[in-house]
Length: 187
Image (cartoon, rainbow, N blue to C red; front, side, top):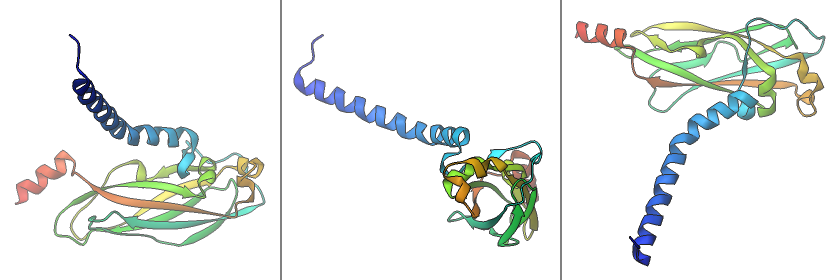
């Protein structure tokens, strides 16, 4: 079957639209994977334990917390900044509050600035690793333990960093099935 020029144009345009749609759909998971692997975009590392080496040099870690538009929680860091030695394990807390009259589930996304410091920022434990569900009126303190890898002082760009900002944004997600069932049974 031979296509005339108009049909070739239509099929070509449809092919471009399908390809662009597929790329748009795949771009978020691919970018997320790329950032986790490379530390690009301020994505942090995950560690099983603290660093074996602690340097005399200190670094300030600043904390930032926001919510996505439409997320009903109040969310903020309990402290704005801490100073610790590079390699030393730090512990910070964020506070979340659900002012609504129903349970709300949330998940935190995060990044580190400056971006090139992300590969040297290692989280040992974090509330951002799991979904969080807050009941009506519930207020919680959520911990994050971390360290700044001593390899930072050897990196061509990162060795001049004196401040690192750890930012979280909470966004609303669907309630887990058991929470949704519990909420339906009380209504």
